[in-house]
Length: 47
Image: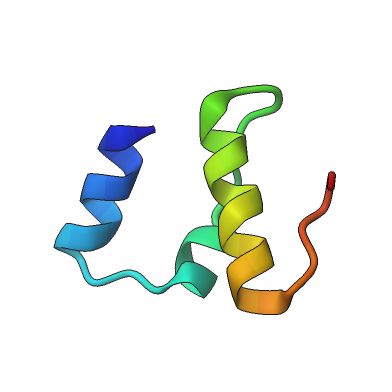
């Protein structure tokens, strides 16, 4: 999860960029995607 966040920061990815990437289920990186969906669109998939 830290690796994905560091990569997003390095390339200047927005929350929407991260939210639109496919994430495996169930994993910690999926939680990262859910957080970005909530930040970008106000509605995560699973919460």
